[in-house]
Length: 336
Image (cartoon, rainbow, N blue to C red; front, side, top):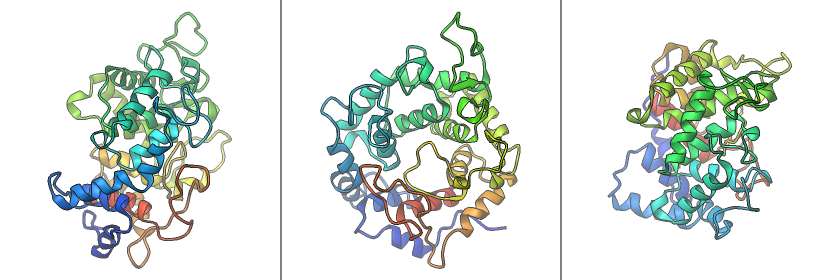
């Protein structure tokens, strides 16, 4: 059994190199537990927001708070509002560092959220999909969004998981129902042939994991338990969850990347469950072993899945040691 919680010193040294202030900032914050009033941390945090990916993305934002075009922001992939907000969150953008960050969050809620709490590709209930709901709730929590509409989105997400108070997809007498994307309880997804979708489940559990325990309603706690039961009913290392065609799982489960959009890897699955306090659970052991074994002799993880040329920023070459992926893996192993 591998002992976790201790990250190799040479891994940390590499992540703390000053040539990449974005990664250095995240490493100081999340791996070294730097104090918020530490001068080195403050300087690095400032640099991360004024240069590199965070700055590039924010400089592409329209003054009104959107990217590419007005509206709910799902398209065009992967530079519109939805994807830019998700990337900013994964880069550790802090609202107090730039007032464009809370403006973007407000714009997203104004245009992508329905009156019943669905975060939607179209701004209407029919555009609801679980991976997007989870991604955006997670991102808004990371970006420090404080808005009762976010609470409503989290409550809807929990309701959609458990089925409590949600009518069947064919019941058109009420808007509080399932639609063709998010089509039933227990993560049932139209894109997965109406079968439970593990990618969506991981996104939603990750979002719930970032919600402080004192803010978790009984309904949210029930949804978390539903998600944990689903993700751990098999060995997550096999990713043998239902697939739309009944065939083997997508190989992307084992390709670690950055950023992470609707495609999920077992590294993000591990993060979600570790955040929920399940790091010591023996059912997660094989997943943690795979993560640990993917590092090279220097304690670095390669970029195996990328959106090169599709996003505002590229994050490295595939099959090469990658600081962003290494940060992700180190986070999970440290906190497991």
